[in-house]
Length: 349
Length: 119
Image (cartoon, rainbow over all chains, first blue to last red; front, side):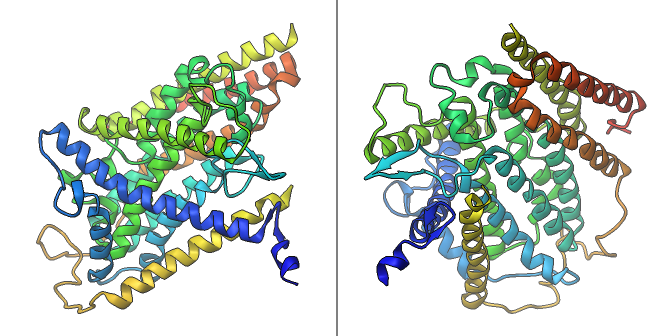
């Protein structure tokens, strides 16, 4: 009876494997987002010759926990004239969509554990790349509906700016990724990484890599593209009226999105879990080493994002839209045409 | 296979539980003492005169419409990109015509000033 229950499977995996993976992914993302806020403050501080948070725990390491508790116990202020349902729903959608997108990102290659093929992601689907793009795009709804529901003029302006920016750069990102898909022959992230055994795609697709990274900065509302919450003009943009855990959800969503775009860039351009120093991938330990490589590469990209924040000033809005539509979009199309031509010509000859 | 997506449904359940649970917990442990002043939408200390839901610049609508066109284009490009090696020159020419058509469309809306934001 109990043995039967243990073998009941959801899709390709046993139900308890799915459940454990789900809890691990959720826990990993929540922890990563929390510690990214600390890392961001530390990096900012050191760039500005300050020390940063150092009172809560050693080196301020318990600061994220203190912040979370504080957010939880704060009052949920809410403006009059708000849309009650959307005001409640939008922050949860922001965090939920960001977390849900991570389900298909493979942190390491498939490993064999006692004859059982262990995938290092929640769900192994063959259109993983499209899935990530589609689910992260849901964040636009969270931002727009959240800003609109708050009945605040700053929020509405921030929400409008943000949604126009996000949809514009979403295309640029999609076009940049098509070059990689042409080379890898697949939309499956695991196959895309395995196609980079000989050379990382950043070597063959440097333009696409650059376009993707610029687009990713805009998609996550990071400087120099943080127009939606340009604090000198719009207070806090779309989340001006949100407090307590609702604000926390927007914050969580933003940082999880950062983790997602950096993980995606790692898998698509930096060879994912493929090591620089050769290591035989056979058992679960090999898989775990792969995870370390993956997270290491993603962390470098995350640091780069924080570094850029304190290096470049914010763009003006019309220049932001011009960059998206008149520079990134044509360059993305150019990249597709060149890559497609080369691959098709080599296949024909 | 469609059953590959089943774990995503489970994860969706976990995400919904997280979203609802944390908000419920925050509502349960946090104080809630609304006053008329506290409920005013923030407008840099000035009492708001009218609803925030007003008309906004037409450029946002134009951007949204253009987005639909080019996003649909990218949806057509993804399946082509996975099999460009098998379609060889035939697929390349066909997709070249498609991309060229949309690129001309982009030039046209550009020349018409639909991408202009400074007024």
